[in-house]
Length: 140
Figure (cartoon, rainbow, N blue to C red):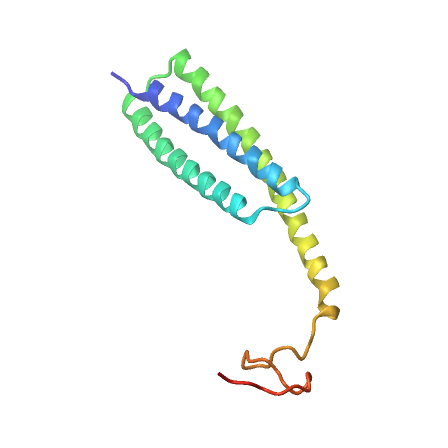
């Protein structure tokens, strides 16, 4: 008996989970400030789901090559997977644009802050600079 319908159903469930994760990613990237740890967890979930999809795709190809019969049930499932995949590709592209926007905003914020940093606070060796403070250096 063919496992192809089961594999396709698992792919569909995984794609749905991937959409949920990518929606969460989009919310994080659209927010005024990004929660780095939440974005890291989302990235890990996305990577895991993509690895699962890669594995399922290999199983699907193996099963389809062994079976080589196209019935309507399998064709419908494959159509659903194709549609979801196309939508997720577009969503991922949009999230990429949002991420680029976040990077630009972060770079602009750094440029605004650069002139206001205290240049003499630490020396090249990472130690506190005493020349600019005029104070005495104490050691304990």
